[in-house]
Length: 509
Ligand SMILES: [Zn+2]
Image (tube, protein in one colour):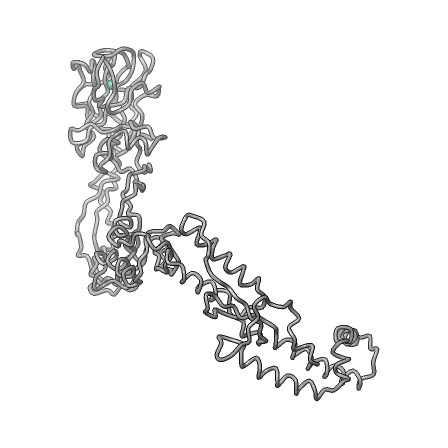
């Protein structure tokens, strides 16, 4: 039975007798060896034979289990018991090597190659970290031992030991954002504090959670010892603004220029963000791209807020035949109610992104709002509140700035090219306040639609209405021409709200 205890491996060049304490193996291995001898001796010579034939017998046992019995039940049981013992013994104890590096035992490995591969990986990784070929300069010796399987040293432990011996490399806490290296610190607390400081301005007594807009990780890693560990620099990296963009929905009366100004952009910058948008033809509900400053790492907080909110008055309509259809008058405004609301509000760097109402309790009910609604038939000239095209044709000049007559000038309306004599229709019903010749407009009609809204129709060849006339939507008010400051037959159409011309394209469908 002695053969199983001998190392089947080749003789080591510098074999050592293990004495005293060792990280693994050593005395314990000796004890195990003794126990093993006693155990196997009791099995006798027969077991030796069987052990040698173990593989073949095992196959036979398998066949029996598979339903092709080749042995009587009793011998089968006896054999499997013996085989079982032999298998356990050879599984538990294995020959191994104690690795000694520069006089220090660093672990027990199954084969020398295990250590050699670990050392090679450490060298590769160190070379990668340091940026030059790094070679371990160690004296390594191996001595054989017999150990239990679980006494083998994890390879990671050996690699860590070797890394710790490299002065040019140190274990450090590394901060990454979306996998991108931000910085390192010997002290984890310094990085935790940095992240805390980043979030601090957005945290208050109502804050229930703090998170970041990107994946933030602090890991312990080996890095070159000379990597700068400056927390202030890391803070600068995390808070640096990147140019992002967000969207904006065009509202009534918006102009491209005003939106650019409001968002701190030049017209050119705004146009670059919106290459497919006709700057002179915005329409309500159009989505524009707007520049947004986004810090490299945003802080997302959730605050639980409790506040009172008005409850809208329920509306009751009362018919009134003294008013025109579409007209209405508030008879009783009602008193809004009050609700106590609790909501979880999500912010990114203090800007609200989401509001999730978790509870709402009525403190006071709202009273009814009563509105009188007109039922009297509306006169044909009454403004509908919507504008239609006065003529259909090619738009030769849009609203806004344009280059004309050798200079840039502001164009207060739309030019729609049409043949001479084309009928010009009232864009909406209303009262004619001007019909006559007016400077560069030529023959002009102005219609007042109430609510401070007026429409202008210029360059006509003839006029079909007079000041004071009531006109209905779609009524022909003039014939197109090229009077005034004009280079061809067209209708110059303007919409003015409280005296200011607005982009007609935003009002026409
Ligand atoms: Zn014009």
